[in-house]
Structures are given as structure tokens and as C-alpha cells.
Length: 347
Image 1 (cartoon, rainbow, N blue to C red):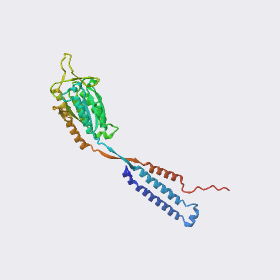
Image 2 (cartoon, one colour):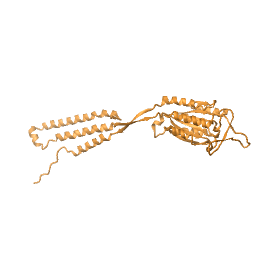
Image 3 (cartoon, one colour):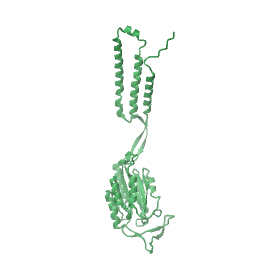
Image 4 (cartoon, rainbow, N blue to C red):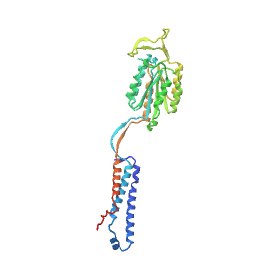
């Protein structure tokens, strides 16, 4: 048994003070009675000595006061424990689902490798609150959760051929930023460190992702950027929309020429600026990997310093017992008169 507001127990001496005042009042009444005259004559005029009843009523009030103080202090006892994950770090994995992610310069494809490495990273860091955003011409998001497998599963729900065309990086970052903002209903959420991990192979030609990154940094967020794919032009495989598997052919334009994708200097400049605006990491893959291992190392360091898993005791609050007892004592005090009721005399 312990108390939620232990400091209030220092008010218990008030009950002792009340008891002392009660005793002084009773002594004062006795001295007043003695000053009326001979105590034998005075006793003869008194039909009943109410001192005992007054003492009892006073004791009831003092005990009720003490119980009220105990109730206000919040008595409780432990009913068990739960493991609280280190939720001081939350992250949004923002994955590009434009059709250029089907390119195979990062085997088996940019998308498959990025999705696989991202899923592994999320599951390797389960103490982080993970959320996810997938995007092409539009963005779809999943709010941060302590259920890491659920966040990882979201990354596999959508495919490039089912998304509108485009590379809306600004929209994706803005959606991630919105989902990382503190929840007013949860005061503790404002203390979390927030990170966005952007994995893309292209450039936003419509929005202004650098400005969005700047707003995210003002909100206390950091954006790490993975520029996946190389600078050499790569053909884009065609994919069967039903099975999601490559058809063995490559996308061609209206003239019958192969459509290629590469990380242009302009795109790289934009992606570097996004990371720089938020003091985040910028990783460009050049060896057939995604570079997510570098981001995982950085996040693991954040977890070590910002979030520590701990065991929390679950308490049952029992303040209603002393509070109820105090009410009962006050009711008894009210019902108990200072003298017994006299019966009416009939002639």
C-alpha cells in the first residue's frame, strides 16, 4: 500500500490539533460549571452529564477528518506490472511507389529491396513508434503505433501500378509531418523525438518538399533521405497489374523507345536540400544497396539516448474506502445528540 499524493499526509496532525481543541473546550466547560457555585448543588440542577456524548461526537469528527485526509492522499496498492516500451522516439517511413521504383539496378528491384530493408529495420527497432507513408502522385499514411509489425505490413498493401502517376514528395512529407504532430489529448506526445525517413528515386516537379521539410524542422522533426538508384539511366520493367510480377518487357514511350529512370543532378540537389534543412542524413546508394542500414544505426543511437524500456506498476485506487468511512462517521455524529431525548410526562 502506498499513496499517490503522499505529501497530503502531513495534514494528519490537523486531526491531533482538533482533538486537543476538543479537550480544551471540555476542560473550559468544566471550569465554568465549577464557578457557578458548590458543585454538589450544581450537580443537583443538572439532569444529565452530556460530557460523555460530547466526547464521543468529538472523537467521531476527529476520526472523520483523519480519514478524509487519508482519502485525499490517494491510497492505492499494486495489482500487477506492465512493460512500457521506449516510446520517446517516433518515426515515419516514407516510401516512394512511383513506377520508376520497379527499376532493377538495386536487385531484385528498387522497390522490393527498399520495402524489404525498411520492413527489417522497423522490426529491428520495435521500441520506436513507427508509422508509414506510401506515395506516388498522391500520398497515403498510417499513424505511428507501438505495433511495429502492423506498420511494416502497411508498406506492402499498395503497389506502384495501383497508385496515380507522379512523385509527390512534398505531399508525402506533409502527411508524415501531420501524423507526427503532438496530440493535445496526450500531453506526453509533445516530448517525443520525431524522425521522417524518406526513401525515393526521383524529384518532385510539382510541390516544394524543401519548404515542407523546413516546417517539419520547425516542429522539431528531422528528415533522413535515402536516394535510391544510380545516375546511369535504367529501363523500367513492365509489371502485370494482376499478379504484380514483371512481364519480361520494359516500358516504352509512344515512339517505341525505352523509358528510363536515373537520379538526376537536379533531383539529387533537391533531396540533399531536404535533409540539410532538417540537419538529417543524406544517403545516396551506389553499390546496389538501399543505404537504410546507415539510417538504422542513427535511429538505434537515438533509442539508446532518448528511450528506455521500463516496467510500470499498475495500481488499484482505494480512496473510496476511507472517504466512505468518513461520511458514515459524520452521519453518526449528526444523528447522535448531546443528550438523550426525554420522554414527555403525562399527568
